[in-house]
Length: 85
Image 1 (tube, helix red, strand yellow):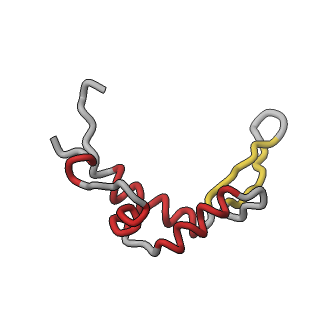
Image 2 (cartoon, helix red, strand yellow):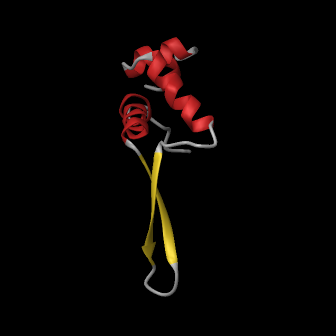
C-alpha cells in the first residue's frame, strides 16, 4: 500500500517543510497569522443570494493558498485511501 506513513516520515515541522519544499520561517509566519484575531490570510466579500439576503465568501489570500496547494499536491493527492473507507 502506498500510504503517507510508509512513504514519508513527517514527524516534525522540519520534516514537513522539507517535504513541502518551503521555508520553515514562512510556515511559522502563516501559523502565527492564522492564530491571531486579526488575520489577513482571507479576503471576504458578500454575494447576493437569488432569494433574499447575501452570502459571505471567505477566500484564502495568496500566501495561504500557496501552502494549501502544496499540502494538496505533496501530501493529500499522493495518499491512497483504501476503497473500504
